Length: 163
Image (cartoon, rainbow, N blue to C red; front, side, top):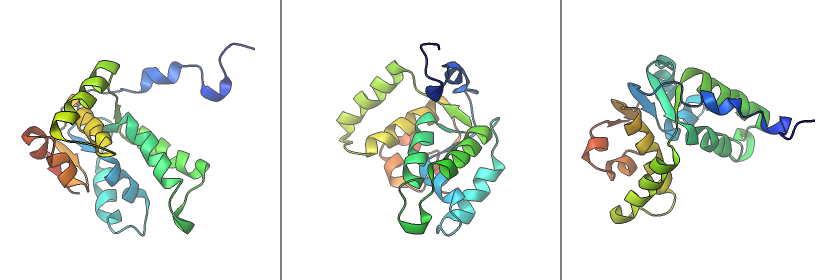
């Protein structure tokens, strides 16, 4: 038996994380979740923009895959998905969109830039997503959290749209 656990894969998966650097549209997790939840108030609009995207023109942050999984497996009551159901949806996102990841230095500078802006708490995760959108040179950032992204400066605010 090798030293690597089959449960955690062989490490080759990481080479596929950033399949494309530049995208036209970038998806915040707040759009990805309702795209898959039929009774969500933003379902139709989120699904429509998601279905128009492909990995050649659409992307999301690598962090959004984990965030999506965490949220849909902890939804209240009947809306909660099993880990297997959630994984199927994460795989759909992974297959459809380019996955944009920050390297260690980019991650550090994203966090470091948040403090002078007074960004605290969970909004730091939106900072990370915003940095991924900038890294991908996204023309449009789809989010339902417009005010969060507008706090990060004019360069981002000009790109932010709701679906």
